[in-house]
Image 1 (cartoon, rainbow, N blue to C red):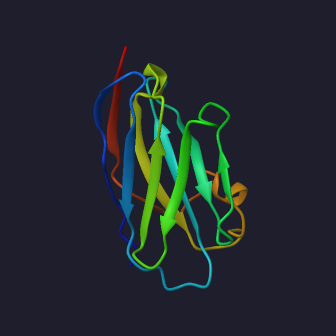
Image 2: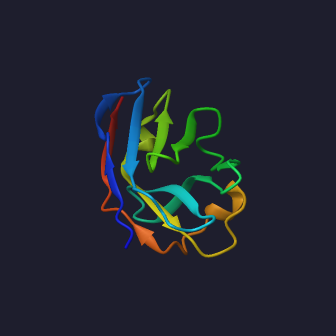
Length: 127
């Protein structure tokens, strides 16, 4: 059983920073994908960042240079450090996991076909 719980969202002024946290516990598999996704005003869920079993990461073009995905595998915690936030970043952010291959690299973890999803945490950026 996999349970994902996000936290860290809130309302903040443009240019500020937030750090999202996803508690996923221990995943009893040799490898797995973790990723962050968001659903904004367009109501279309999109991949934001992914991290693979090898620790490599991948980012959406819209957040490159501003967001950083990381994890503490021993603690089963996924992070998304978001800097220089913009109004367009306003969305509900979801963490997700997939333990079926492919999961080696971050690029493998940017697909919407994830197996487990958190309930989301809301991020609102004001100008």
